[in-house]
Image (cartoon, rainbow, N blue to C red; front, top):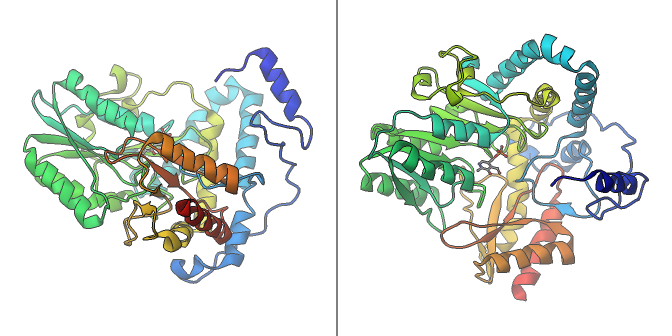
Length: 438
Ligand SMILES: Cc1ncc(COP(=O)(O)O)c(C=O)c1O
């Protein structure tokens, strides 16, 4: 949305004083007055530490959240922790101060250092990754650039894959002359039946050469058995592009855990970097299977950097990535994943199997992280699910979202974050039981 000058002035004016209304209708937040307490991560195992409320209260104190609603929609993007936001502000000021002097004289070396840091965090070689503006850019470049397809080959995706990636896969029909195959993820999903669904679909399409596979599903939170599916596709001579937009940071994973040759990530969801930063991963030895980005000649053909050409980017966003990784590491990737799972289980436990509530996401270890979706009283339409989201917000102050595009119908998605508490999850469970009883 673009603001005209007049409306921007009106917006700034309204948000100026403490307690004044912002464009969203909520009073502006008061300035932060205290530095957050030191983290001091517990030495206990992650599953035990997940219940250490004193520790998680210290972690939560690093986030300034609105008091006017409870955010259970962290799946869109991840709020920056206060120290990360402070770094972003500092970098924004410095870059703005130095302007092109910064861009011409310092940005190159700074970006290289950030790239090295990100590669280490992912467990990848630095020459296997390129920084992008997000998962969309990474995945579109991988899908469009993959050059091993021949007319008549089959490419495949599932109903639960991300819409923009489905569009890019559809486009391969025109671009590469391929045939498209589509599978439906079973409901209720389990590790076993998801694996079986992919096996069956791959068996039915011996011409399969490229599969799009979502690691942590954005609609239901289902975690796909990526390693196994990638290995099975490889045995059949097919490559897999993994959409890991929700994987890194929500789960304690590295590139090696996925076993894939082509992966797209972002760092602005579960790593908590500023919006506008992602990663494209291409395994060593596979670069020639990807075209240069738009015939880019600014980088050598044997560098992954020739497969991405973003243009002028938000320098401060990239410069803030190390601070986001520092915070992520300080909280502890395994502890964070366990805490998110604990908060998710806390609301799912009391509602699972209750009349009028269908939880779509399995409980089995390895098949779920923070995100879980449900339907109320069998409602599969957009209107019914929007209604649930609206009721949760207006009657209970709980903010969630609905998801569409599942073959079996729409649903409501819940995504807790590190600033949520067990009490938030309890309020949600109680609200759902009340709404289901109607
Ligand atoms: C599964 C999935 N893939 C891709 C994306 C796009 O990510 P980005 O915002 O980094 O472009 C999202 C964003 O919600 C997603 O959930």
